Image (tube, rainbow, N blue to C red; front, side, top):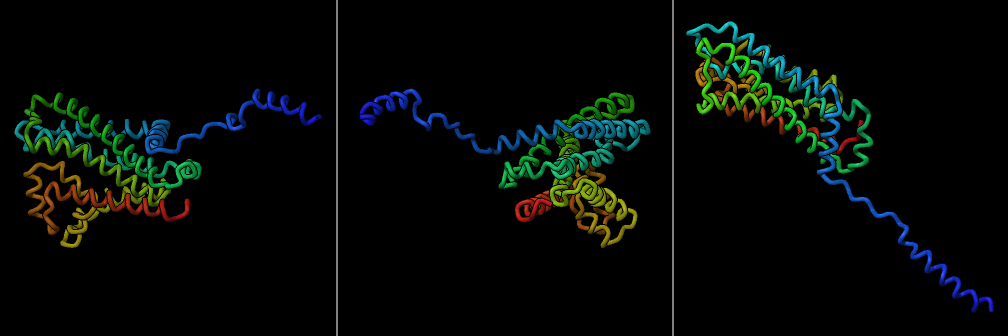
Length: 287
């Protein structure tokens, strides 16, 4: 009796409740590269040090170009393009710092475990950092180039410093400024991803890009010139005019790389360092 009378009531209650599965929360979408890229971009923009690095890089590039322009006199054998990009001598340090900040930011802040727990494959994070670094460094270098042009050519136009952008040599020098600084930033990223320590990565980058190159320059010789030609700083050959490159290759005992050979050397360093950093990230513990 009880069984017969209770069955309709149970059915009515079941109908009111609905299926149990309907109360289950919908599954969240997986982690995509777009989300990883957006997260890395947000991290970069949230750091005040990134903004100060970009601003500092622009200021030193513009200031040095303008200061050197003050010494130019009518009749000097000085091209306007070479003068505009002369600020790279100091700006390359800012580009290097920018890359190191991106490569070591996770480890310095202690958020790397949370990041790689969310992205267990790890490598998409490094690829996203490469994209973010390229955009940030390219934008910073482009602004520095335009600002250097305005303050240098505008202030020294009375001395005949004219820049013809349609000229192939001038276009190569101006574009080389942006390409070189972006490449140096990627070198910093690769070193940062490999060493994972901000101070160690910055010291290693400064030694590799700036210090060793200058030490070898003041102690020329076959071995010294060969080693110097194979350092990342060879990418700066893009910023030298054709006459300067001819003199450099004629007086150097190292391989005559020309403008694009130096760019290939810089690209090789970027690729090697990023591959090494990616290998450590994929195969080694997060320490």
